[in-house]
Image 1: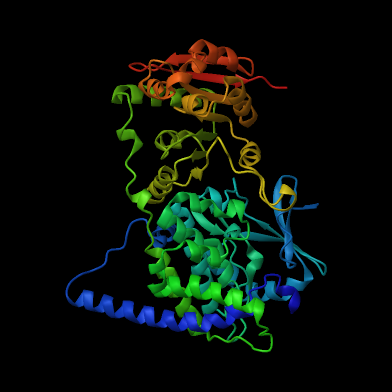
Image 2: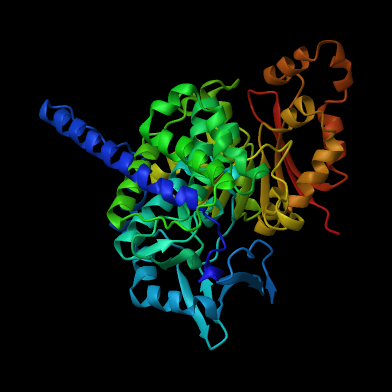
Length: 63
Length: 457
């Protein structure tokens, strides 16, 4: 399957992904806790108009 | 049939042009991947989300499969995107990868050149980048993603829009060690930035000294999705200081509302008179004038040197649900060159504009910048505009205009070098390349609007 590996990712970086994923797991957990706490004390985060999702949502509505 | 010179990296297939249309040939080596993705409904699901450029299968035989993708009107490159465009392109890449993982597929590369702006939105154009996911395999395109997207975005956020042009001089993205060097020391304490930039740049250098070939990297799918989600969430919150502080140019203009309306009316009338459907607005700022022409045109390219203005143009269009504007960041004094191997991978801005085959170029409130700030003689700017489109609508602010006065005053001792900056010298020089169709002074201003038609041949 070597022909598919036209992009050399570097093995070191592949191994590092396990560490990155572990950190990401922590970040996501931390953010979830913060959001829950904020929601609990009545602070709600508002989605901005220019967010990525709103761009594509508009489309599905108009479809 | 000629392979497009940018389409040589991936052996799965290539793009070629025939009778003006772009097709994609799929080689036998990718047949299995293509059929698996197709049968799993991956392409269709991505079309429905409007994340992938739709394609039709044209022919299938043992040697090749030919698909015809929906044609792009104009391709802009990452170094011509504004901050929000760049950010959305990055988010789209990550969203697609997360979606693919959930469906047991994966992206084999994450080049920023795989994204184009079509009908106002970012869309993924490299159909053959999709492959089957291998159990517990890490994402091999992560480093490329960070070099193409995350690195330049972080630096643009910190230091300004010039870093969005990174891929113009580093076509394979910015080395993470270089990104790391330019980020402040405190960036190490940010978990997402630390892991994607600092940690990955280390793994890069370590690898060259150590042979780690015997090891096999493993990462569970759910961990990979978490990693990408955290990265996507970080990018989602990124903002550019220069963009949020950008105050509207039209609050600072030097003429009255009536004159502004008069200018709009003239431009609309003239565009209608020459039946312009495709329009190029050079120095178009945030698209204020282009927007006036939306109901009478099919497509309007808005280019400007000012990244925050183009960003505003892009965001306004997203909000208004319009899709006719093509916002592009471009400095006319140094438009994007042709880059890559043999100068043929990515075309220059000018040759793409010529291929776009627009009807008219608008150069409103631009000539004084080119002539006085850029020192470009009238003959040279006329020759450039004449290359682009058959018609030209150009605004000439005379020496009494406050902007022109300001620029001339700033020339101090060299002021006399610009004594030729007069309306008669301008008209004379431009009439060597163009036939003058109309000219009209905009009431209440020191500005005159000209409509020219170029001499053919």
